[in-house]
Amino acid sequence: MLFLQPPVNSFRREGRAGRGFYLYNSILLPYSEIHPERIGARGMEKNGSLKSRVYDALMMGIVRGEYRPGEILTEGRLLERFECSRAPVREALASLCSEGILKNLPRCGYEVVRITMDDIRQMLQFRRLVEGGVLADTCRRFTPEDYRELYVLAENCSRAGSSMWEHWEQNTRFHLKLLSLSRNEYAVRELRSTLSLLKVAYGQHYWGRWDSAYTADTQCHFHILDALKTGNAAEAQAQLARDLEDFAVFQ
Image (cartoon, rainbow, N blue to C red; front, side, top):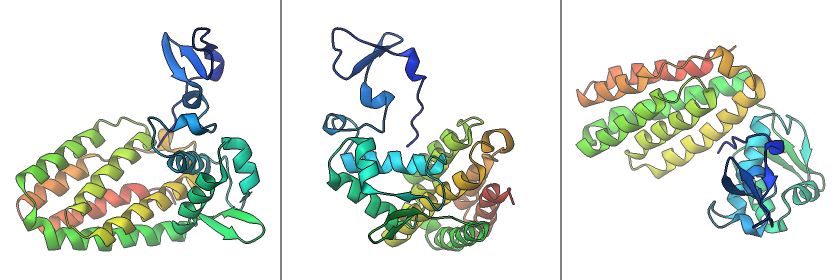
């Protein structure tokens, strides 16, 4: 989840509803939308649980380089920042540890894991093997409705524009949906975890450079689907490999 925020100084407090609300371009916004790191109990209504919001804010802080590889995060520091109870912070930290993004250091804190280029290559190899194998095994079971949904997702990805991060979110939705049609919950869970780790990896290595240097070949998704519809699993796998190469262009 990306927090695309206008400058805070462009907001002013709305006198009529001044408690925690600001007026921006005639739109009344809650304070937590302007400062998403401050997500106390009032931030739960429309954006899921506190744990999810703490997780999202930490994840983007790591991706953006606010929390650097090797940096130690402590519960006390995060409690002060997020202004919420201890439980959602601990739950978010546990989730990030389980995904390999943080490492729990007893009596010390949580270390931001440094992800190497070799790690990236191994994760992309894992994706080729898992996603490619599933395509060959399950494509004959796809229904017309499945294809309609996938083509819509492919179109959304092609419209994502030049922003790498917008493309990333749409690309993630496409690949998770494609794999979910295998009905293999374990494979989907592992892919979701791998995509989260890859997002952090690319943020650590390329944050601030992607949008100027990256051009995604958004046609690969259409080529994958076209090949699957004709029963050509080998071509679909080849197009998948080409699609994944877009994420290995920086060495």
